[in-house]
Amino acid sequence: MPPVSVTVKAMPETPLHPALTAMDLGSLRRTAQGKVRDIYALSPDPDSDLLFIATDRISAFDHVLGSGIPDKGRILTQLSIFWFDHLRDLVPNHLVTADTREYPADLQPFRAQLEGRSMRVRRATMFPVECVVRGYISGSGWKDYQATGAICGIPLPPGLRESDQLPEPIFTPAAKINTGGHDENISFDTVVEHIGPNYAEDLRALTLAIYAKASTHAASRGLILADTKFEFGLIDGQVTLADEVLTPDSSRYWPTETYSPGGAQASFDKQFVRDYLESIHWNKQAPAPSLPDDVVQQTRAKYLEAFTLITGRTSLDT
Ligand code: Q0Z
Image (cartoon, rainbow, N blue to C red; front, side, top):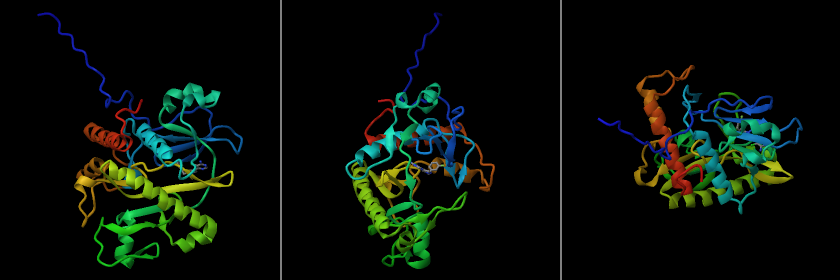
């Protein structure tokens, strides 16, 4: 019997690397760490650009899980870059470059880690407000509506069901709560007290305009953009869109095809993770569990599906 030779072609959806859940950038100073993203200063100069990195970490039920999702950081970074470009005539953004060759010389040894998952961004003076916009009623908005008939002080018509479309999109700002706690929904008047009426009106108008443009694009790709959250800052005195934008981590996307108001909608990206965590009856206290490989792979496929639907691209590399 002659030996059988089999050539396995690398499929585009096959990850080439394991999940990257912790960065090692040598002596570079990390200035902030979130559940899934890290921010580094590009130099000790207090005005230096920042390096914004999306790791492959994934959170669920407010915990970072023991397993990462291969390519998740690259997928979310490429989505943010797509949206920054799609929105460029509407709002300036903090992106300088995602081309790692344009990063400082001391970062070149780390290019393999950084490629695709990082952005060199301008440093902004951030507004202490999470700029949330909702076109549909879900999550904390649904909770607040059930308790008070309003969200962030905006009265809503009676009789809305969970996941219903709102009469029109609404700006529902939130105040950041440090470490662990959920953001607290606040009224527009509270935003005015924090940052003044002019900036408050700028943030509301920009948030609603970005939502209108992004939800139109999403709808053309079979997705409902139920809600999303932006962070803005000042760069050279200009109100500028920062952070990540319109990723599945900062937004609720629902497939139009399966949309069914009157209850919660499945999470586009994390439903396999949530279902698994419920199936093992995890008590939602640390330490968070790791995920079986089939759950990791199914979840990775959902992030890739979101990327392909939204960008029209089938590969992260082109
Ligand atoms: C964003 C955050 C974290 C990820 C600071 N361009 C900028 N200039 C100044 N500050 C920021 C940005 Cl994007 C900034 N965040 C939120 C924290 C990981 C995002 F730990 N914090």
